[in-house]
Image (cartoon, rainbow over all chains, first blue to last red; front, side):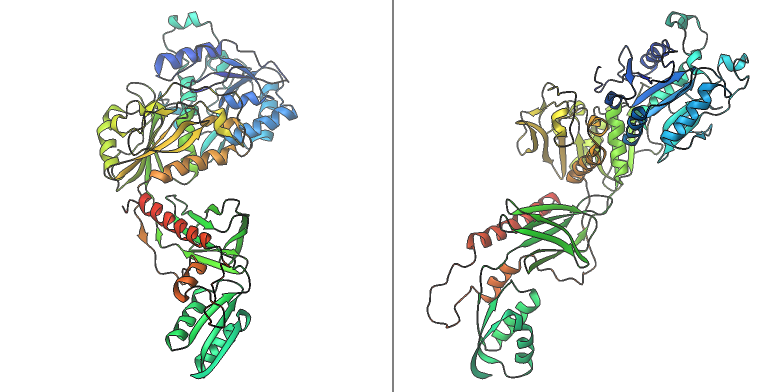
Length: 207
Length: 394
């Protein structure tokens, strides 16, 4: 497993319980956007890191997603707790867009057990203005607008915070589907819908 | 005064002093010490001698010896640095007026401690107690940090904030869209103690950082920023020396990427080396101080090293800032604890060397290690000199 030095490397977490690799195209789109809009030194490809492995400490931001039940093994939980204590950040997204669904119910319970209370993040939080400006909070996704999943537009993201800093960012908005298209399609899009992903990465790199 | 001689052990000295002060003092007194007496007893004996009593002293064995110095550190939490000396191999105990809080064996004769705020400190070896008081405090100001958005800048800013420093951080992100402090930065020593340039320098900062340092401010330079720092840098930056992928708590520097400093400018001191390569260097620039760091990825020490890495990384960066921070000393209100930093040295200084009780012309037994007394004096002078030098007192 490669070792991150000063370059930002996008890391996807591999956990034992479910389909951790349900959104393989998200990394390449976010990496492209970070390189396109910022001067951040970003590695051209992402990595996959085992959540039970000490390799997670090389990547202070890790992306997790899936459709199926989400549980950490005891080894994964122990590593994640140390990871968060040292300053790491998790971004977890429900790929089902379904608050009644199995991923949301199990993932939120597991994150609470591992990291602490999940609370609604105010839509005035600096996450929404640290690079691009999102005056109305988290941007809505196509799946939300089309009634996919729970047929709800989720107004807030949730977060576990410590010392005024987000440790775990949880999304029910299904950004994994929103950002999981083929990279060649990006140039055909009128609006770049990955900009909020840039905010998440900028926040992780500066706070 | 009565024409008689008395030989008195230390255990009976206090009562004897009262008796001599309130009644007839003997014409000659010989005191046998078990430990170096404190300042009050010394003063009393000096007064007794001044009133006409011939005074000699010696010791029943080797007198335990110690010396101590304490000075404030430029740290928002008011930490102090304690330097204590004792003969090599002896056990030295550090404490304050409420009791002891650490005890070490000094293999090389000197021990240093970084402690929470105290007004006075004592070091004791056996029954000999040395005391020092903190004479100044160093009020701290803000830190201005500039770096490219990334783990190194982020975790340095976080470490300093967690150590209590208010940090105004500017992260370079894009040509017209950086993460910058909401307040405008007026970079002078009235508001800022130090500047930390992690891996870059803003073009608009070049002149004002130099003026800030020349007027007394501190500067910490990372390798990426050193290349643009011009005359402020301590030396040139070498090619990166890669490190193994693991980092241990016991020797974290071995697991970091180092760009060593070479071609050191005159007056530069090497504060740390890694396997012979300068890793941290320091120099004076006019009224200010600059520390140049060769490591590019100290964030890995916090994230990848063991469970002590977070606290150690924070303390290391706070220590670097403390070395350079502009923090003019302010005298503290007088302390009730009397300073007595080297009681054995003071005993010899005020009462002369030991002599046998008969007063005959007998050779003075070298019963105390005179080289150690000399070493204690030199250590105290060095501590005072380095303290004055670091505080810019010339």
